Length: 636
Image 1 (spheres, rainbow, N blue to C red):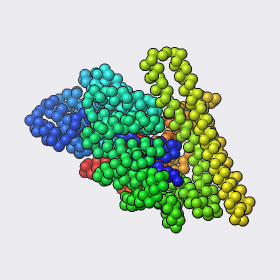
Image 2: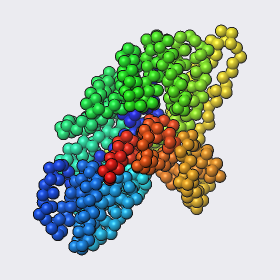
Image 3: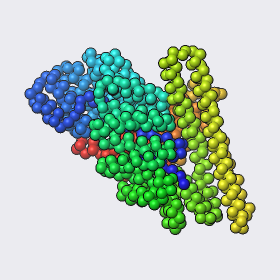
């Protein structure tokens, strides 16, 4: 019995349909490293200083307070530095202090103000000869634009910063810029370019002997290989990152590496080896007190024990997850735990307990309208009744499972094709590197491109065949259940309406009649409609709804979204949802639980909200909300 767990960012992916997404903004843009002792030293020097020296000390203090999250002190010292620099007509000091104030406003999530101060800092910098300062301002601007999901603008700033780093031969600036470029490509699912930039950053960081930054860069490379199912390479990079994290005793980094190594091994069906690493991660997160990750890891371990048919161990772990999820009011985690416990009881042949937990999980999933959890619950109920020989109840559950599954088929197909395209491009990149090393020129390049394209087409064909076989198996199962019902004198029940295979939408726009002028007009209408009407706040908002609103057709809309926004419809909508979630959490009057926010901004499940939020912002919703509250408190 296979269990599907999509709960958290560190949970295993069992179906290869949904890929793991977990990348945080590791790379600090503040050069100055802060500590209480350093701040004390700067304060002593400040009392004895004057003129331009005082300006520079004030800027350093502001930067140090930003690093230690003391936003009020950061603002006070940054503003004093700016006022003094203006009086002294000290252009460099003005640019540096405006940059520090921009970092302050970014820290309290006032992005418009942050952009304004960074732009003023660039204007002041024009009267100086400090390219290094200009490069760091570009980095800071790019970070703000990442937060508001304007990736193309952010990428432009990071590339300018990289060019300055190359001109100055500043490896630190280049490495920062490359890492942020890699993250943007990762967010846009362009794993080829992301990997290329991370590898370049790694070579630069190695020359600086910065172990933390090197560990974070290597970890990012491992994430890319994990998302493209290149497990040996992924495991190798996670091991390298782990060694560095252990050397500097970075607990969170160690725990993340252990968890990812468990995911890699479990996805390769090396369940017992995977459990070893899950237990290591579990022990670390216990010490860190992160209950959410503890509940996810308990589920991951339970999944593996369930597959290994060690049902009692699986049940115990699921019950621990249920207890933790209930304590932190993680309702989605509670639903998962009930369904998982029910499946464990099925393995133990305790039908009464299994029925109790599965029905409870189903009711909660139905009440919350969580589609994935509903599908999982009905699938588990169907399998339980089939095992008991209760074919009538099994048939009823199976019919509902098929209905829920059919509604997700199109999305699954698109995800499969996206994964194949990604893997094809990473393989093509590897081939290109090999070609360059062997000095094989034009004819070889054409040959590799042809072979790669043929492989891609073959993979697409394989996916189509697998999907057809999957639905064909479901049809045979349905027919078999119908036969049992007939033996029990329930006859003439037709299931043909439940097994119509939806037609696959074409992802190709080669024959499109859409001209550039019309495309630009529709794109502008789409953007204005999304901003003014906020249709994405409805969790069931789909491409057909947008098509109707725009009074055009699906093919045009799909083409415009892919070409203008460089993403699929789901990612396009999620950008607006995450931006709205950030706006809500930044409101000082918002005091509701994070667990309820995903519904408010249009997500059908908390796990989908969690994954999308971390991809877009680089932090968890809870961490983001906590920082906003701390910022609000320090401003009073």
